Structure formats: structure tokens, C-alpha cells
Image (cartoon, rainbow, N blue to C red; front, side, top):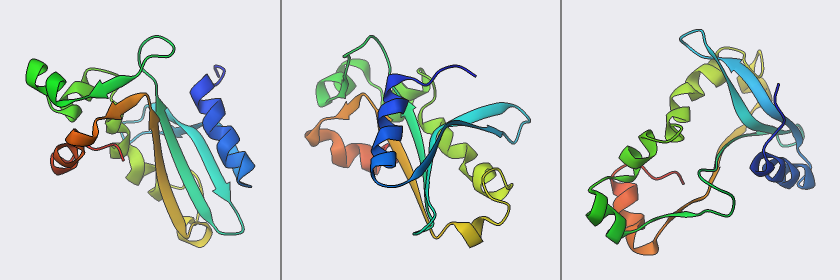
Length: 142
């Protein structure tokens, strides 16, 4: 398995500092029989809190992609359409049911998980004046 990316190492460090057990690059089988991974899986056994972190960092180092009114006007795209051309960051959501239902993490998921958090991390920034529109379109990563 390849080494973890810097963004994944930062995510893992954050959860370790908060007392969670972590596993970067946690492999699972998709509904179609292929393989994918959870960038960082974090678990607190005392609180039974499971965190599934997915990281997407696009472009060169130090790059930040801003979603603004000017960009949408210029390109005529919604955030989720723009994202589909990248590595399908939001497409990860489609695999969540498989991840939690098919004993990919725990054989008795409800026994071991009382709280589930999906943690998206990226170098996408949504301008304040676009937040309501992005959320209304159902394409907000937050």
C-alpha cells in the first residue's frame, strides 16, 4: 500500500491528539466488487464515536480552490458539477452504506458505534456569499 499523503497524516494526527485510535488507508470492497479506501478511520472506544475522514487535495502544493460567484458566472457550473471532473470527492458518499452495513469495519456496527461522523477535508473554499446557494443545491461538502 502506498504511503499516506500529508493531508491524511495531518488528519490522523488531529484524531490521535483527541484520543482516538486511527487507521489510515482503511481498505474496503465496494458494491461493484472493486476496492477503495477510507483515507483515515478514527475510533474512540470509550465514546463509541467513529470518524470516517475523506481527503481530497487538488492541484499543486499550497493551492486553494475558491468557489465564488465570479467563478460560477464565468464557468456556469455548480460546485457538484465542478467536482465531478476531479477525483469525485463527493462520490465517496455513495459508498457509505456499504462501509457501515457489510461488516467492513465492525461485524456488529450498532453495538460498537453510537456516533458516526463523516469528516471531509479539502483545499476547496466556498466563499461566504456562496454558502447558501451551495447548500441549497445539495452539493455542500460540509
